[in-house]
Image (tube, rainbow, N blue to C red; front, side, top):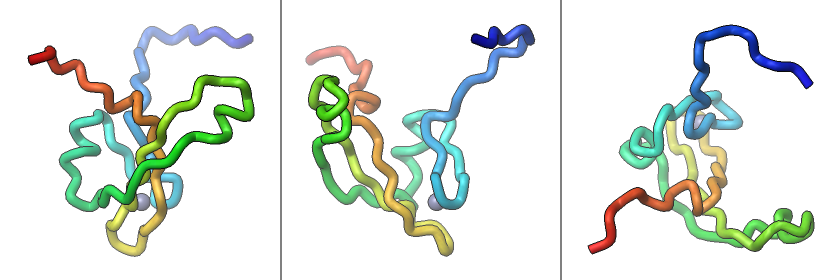
Length: 85
Ligand SMILES: [Zn+2]
């Protein structure tokens, strides 16, 4: 196991496009990007096969330039920290 020794904290982006490598630093960046088209919802069956709890995936299409790949993001990553009511 390697331990990171540098003091700089690297923050992983919320999502990186697997095709064009575009990065969205935060969930808000992602949701505010008009190039992301929401395509639907599917169950993450691979997680179930691994014995993990079933969870939903939100499927987006990255409609930017020549990119047009599908991006799957766990629905739980969109669980808002919005106060109830
Ligand atoms: Zn892309």
